[in-house]
Length: 281
View 1: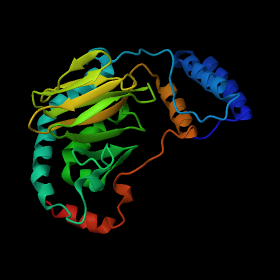
View 2: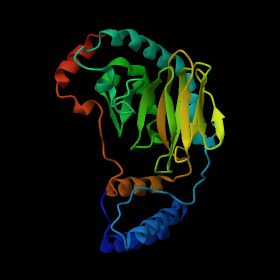
View 3: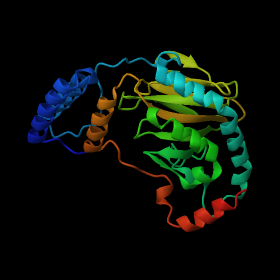
View 4: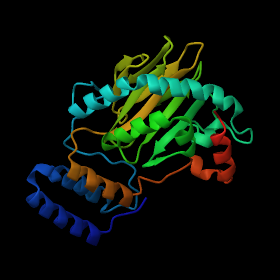
């Protein structure tokens, strides 16, 4: 990751004070505090920045749909169009039986979440503002839905379908940033599956939505005999103002938190991929 130098940090802090004066409702003081923390942690150290904790926003493991207007909007939109999402997913299952024998499905949609673990499949729909060719071909209504939700999406996050196969366990882990929330929409939800965030365990349900903060320790498991499928969306934390989001996008790019890895961009023979996708239906 890139290291901020003292001249740049000084200029940034001066600019933030000006913005705080011009836009008092923008909560620039929170962003300024985060910059000060970064400057303090890197002033006498050669260590790279590997964590970005944003102060002054609510920090709890689970969020309810009615906690914020934004989460209510996301929930209502997903539920309203759940049948379209589910139908496209089910249709894609039969389509993928004939999909490009030269490639694995995970290579078309994105990398598997666990390297060399084909039991945890990861079908990428949207990443950092871009839809995959596969998503555009197989899930047009879902793509349209995601487009409607873009104002709520964390721009450096993802929208994916994730299959957790029987017996798969995701061990306890945590992510390094607290400005986004994870949204799960249940699609195929066997009984013996669960996710624990913080000290609370919940289960997925078909057509139901929940939200959690993955900067808390979390884990998941599938002890059933069938696949668990969810649609995952990364959202901005609802308490961030538009001005804070703009500043955070600049900062995260500068700190190199936005490196894009994997995904369909790595496929060399894209023309062959596109031709195959056109003929799936």
